[in-house]
Image 1 (spheres, rainbow, N blue to C red):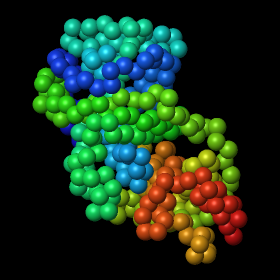
Image 2: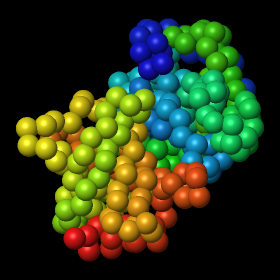
Image 3: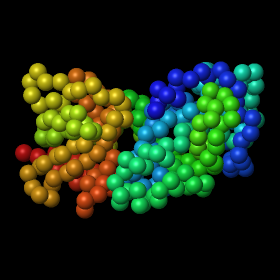
Image 4: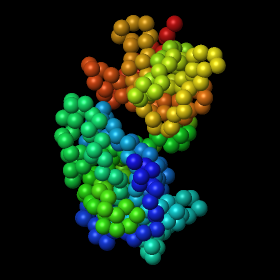
Length: 303
């Protein structure tokens, strides 16, 4: 999907008409816009979950920013000051200049990924209703993993479904999202205190492409570092945000954990995984603070 969208030219015209979304975001904090652009840049692969249902996660990416109703299709079309704060947005072939000081509405354009619902099991499809995740007014929570910089999340409201009439994505169904900037949160992985441990874990990649024994060597605020267990073995190639499943058996039935997470960093021997969902009562739920504390205590006391 990413190749299909990004393979098209960025130089065409913007859409001539936009359906109305949120009328006004009020006074916009350009510092938060800078952070949003940094962690949710155009073209970067992201993840999202609809209507706060963290057990339902899909891939997406930002196609464009919509600035006061005008599309900006490239990060290169944003002028910034010495601190990285946007000063001017340039839209369309004519590079219409939109001063950041006049910013009244900032939105994100993403692909209509409704077809991904067909990959869900019946139970999870029923949670969101077929084809209803992008109903106007629904919430879409975006997740961005930025390597060593950390993890960022932001809640957005569906403003409209649109079919672009022209531009680089003409005749393509898109979703216009209005971010709620006060929900923008960044977790800095570099500042998280790490606790050393040595516990076995089975790591599985999607569709059975890899399953192998590894060792958890440390745990921080919501992330674990794992190392391949067998001498001379290497981890397979893994792109950032690829989903992995961890099976952690600490020797007692109540201390067996099945967790899904996303890759933050990977080398041939070591991988850092952000922990996100815990299997409970037959379904994956968000890994809560108490769950994380129990896991950390179990890992630190293993053996």
